Amino acid sequence: MTSRTSIIGWGHSKFGRLDEPDVTAMIGSVVPQALTHAQVTADEVDGLFVGVYNNGFSDQDFQASLVSLTNPEFQFTPAMRVENACGTGSAAVYAACDFIDSGRGDVAVVIGAEKMTGVDTPRAGEILLSGCYRPEESNVSGGFAGVFAGIASAYADRYGDPSAAMAAIAAKNHHNGMTNPYAQLHKDLSFEFCNEVSDKNPYVAAPLRRTDCSLISDGAVALVITSADRARTAPRRVSFRARAHANDFLPLSRRDPIEFAGARRAWNQALEQAATATTDLDFIETHDCFTIAELIHYEVFGLAERGHGHEVVDEGLALPDGKLPINRSGGLKAKGHPIGATGVSMHAIAAMQLTGEAGTFQLPTADLGGIFNMGGTAVTNYASILERW
Image 1 (tube, one colour):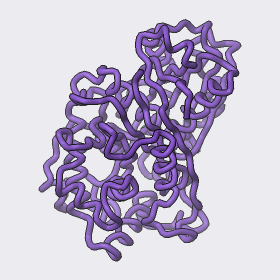
Image 2 (tube, rainbow, N blue to C red):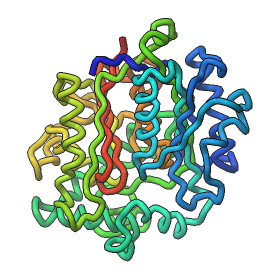
Image 3 (cartoon, rainbow, N blue to C red):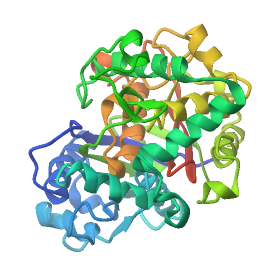
C-alpha cells in the first residue's frame, strides 16, 4: 500500500464496569478527547464511523445517530454504523480508511463502543452466541466459551494438552495489564494460579478456566484518521503501512477449527503489503478473547510451526522484554473486551506505542507494530501494520 492515511489522535476510556449509563454517554466522553488530542475541530470532520455490536445489549440501536446527541456540532456530519462481531471496531477503522483513501474526505472520526454490563451474565452469554453459527453451535454447553473450549480440546487431541501454555499466556497478559491505566483488571495472577483449577479459578467450559477467558466489559475509544496531507500538520501521525481483511466460513463444521485459515490469510496479506516479516515487528496487539486463540495466533503469525505455539511461551519471546512483545496492553484478557471498542482500542494502543505516548506501559522500542483483530471463531479477520512517520 502507498497510502499514508494516518491516525493523528485518540480518546480512550477505561474499560470495565463503567458509570456511564449507555453507549451514548460513553461516545460523548471519548470524542472530545480525540478531537483535542488531534488538534482538530468538529467542523473539519467529514465523516463519522461508529462500531457497536449491540445485538441485544441495548434496546437502542441506530448508534451512528447518537454521536450528535452529546456532540451537537456533528448534527449534519455524515455518520454510519458498522458491525462485524468482535471485529466491529476494526471494521469501523477500515471503513474510515476507505473513506479517506477514496478522496471523499480528509478527516474522519472512528468510534468503537459497547455497554455490556447493563444485562446479566446469562443474557450476555446468549447475546454473544450470535457471533457463532446458531443452527449448529448455539446449544454448546458454556456458550461462546464452550465453542472455544471445543477448539482447545481439538488442539489438545491433535498436538497435546495446551493448558500450561494457556496459563502462561494468561499470567503474561495479567502482568502486562497491571501497568495499563485503561485496563479493566489490575491483578498480577501467577502462572501457578492460572494453571490450577480452584474455587477462584474454576472451569468456565473445560478445558478453559476463568483465567483463560476475556471479560465482559464496558468501554469506548475514538480515533481521528486523516489523509496524508492533513496529517503533515498534525501533532503526531501513525500511518497504515498495510491493512488486510479476510473472511472464513462461519460454521466450524465447514473448516478445520484450529487452522484459523482466514486469520493466516489476512496476516500474510498484510505482511506482503508491508514488505516485512513478523519478526521485523517491534510488538503485536492480538485478539486473545480466549488464551487458546493467542496460542494459535503464534502459529498463524509464523512464530512457531503448527502445534508448537508453546515454544513461543517456553522461550519467552512474547514477554515485554522478549524479542516480540505481544499484548503489552494486557490484551483482551486483562484490558477487557467491550466488543465494538476492541478493534479501535487495538489501533489506539498501537498508535500510543509508536508515538511514545503509552506512558506506564511504553515499550523501549516501537517503530513498527502489528494488530490482529478477529470476529467470531476467526471468521472475520483484520490485520494492520502501523508505523509512525
